Amino acid sequence: MKIGITCYPTYGGSGALATELGLDLARRGHEVHFITYAMPFRLRGYTEGVYFHEVDTSVGHYPLFEHYPYTLALASKQHEVALQMGLQVLHVHYAIPHATTAWLAKEMLGPGHPLKVITTLHGTDITLVGQEASLHPITKFSIERSDAVTAVSTYLKDETIRTFGCEQCRISVIPNFVNLAEYRPADEKTGDGLRPAGHKLVSHVSNFREVKRVKDVVRVFSRIRKAMPATLLMIGDGPERDDAEREARDLAVAQDVRFLGKIDTVAPLLQQSDLFVLPTQAESFGLAALEAMACGVPVVGSRAGGLPEVVEDGKSGILEPPGSVEAMGRRSIELLRDPERHRAMATAAADRARLFDADRIVPMYEALYREVAG
Image 1: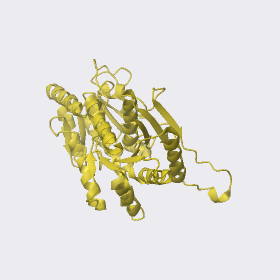
Image 2 (image 1 turned 90 degrees about the vertical axis):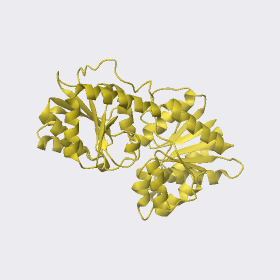
Image 3 (image 1 turned 180 degrees about the vertical axis):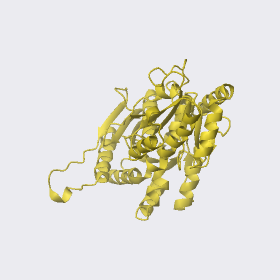
Image 4 (image 1 turned 180 degrees about the horizontal axis):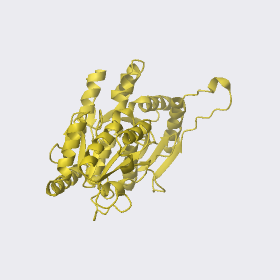
């Protein structure tokens, strides 16, 4: 099939999932066209069957176009690529603005080109952006006008129906997935160059937005550090990074916290980790947690949103209510002090991740494409 994909190309779970999906679809023989304003961060090098179409938002120097909307440029580009490449399906990730522009592109094509629009909901497009009063009607419209809608967790499906009253919307739950060929337990945990000898290695990956509660990551780590030698890897970047760095200094653990910034390939870092901390306020799924689990790393996270659908408390990880820094720290210390229990939880985490193997999940999208495209 000929499939178009629009996503946010920046760091975050939705962009990572959309890019990995496109790459996997290409490996399965499909022709995949990414349509967005920049190269997706996980689109590394050349892959046969994968094409990138950059959205151009420059429209000259006419003063009235100084704030030319990206959404209009995107809709025009989606229309252009669908027409020229003969796309059968346009799979957009995030309801706002991508489902809206996809609907507009489809309307521009007219009935002579039966493009089908599939929208995948990832979280903040529903729980944050879509609930803004000014955007609520158009978000609801865009969801209802999609030919098919998927959500990455049952939690997100239920939240969408509750928020928008889309009782007539057919929303399929297709969870995020992980490439087990890349994300797998390390043959040997050395931690060379990542931590001093004898240190436990704790990690966190996110886009450092407020909802990720990155200061709580540092607070949990400070409790671990008081109990044993440990190093924290903070992977990613975003608006809360400065606050997290300040928190590390205030708690006197800055010398053991490494802020690594944005890194495209995180699997080698996760493989060397002993613990992954994700004390998020709300998580629609928790792709970063899944990738850590696939590397055989127990997750300490929040019992919130869709994360309990991924992490089994007490078996493949540890879950506590958001903000429960003391409990997360205490249970982390207990786990790291018990090698036998840690090994069992690490094994259970890797076993749990196999349920979300790309080879199990991507065919679900393929089946949906065939069903919708007829």
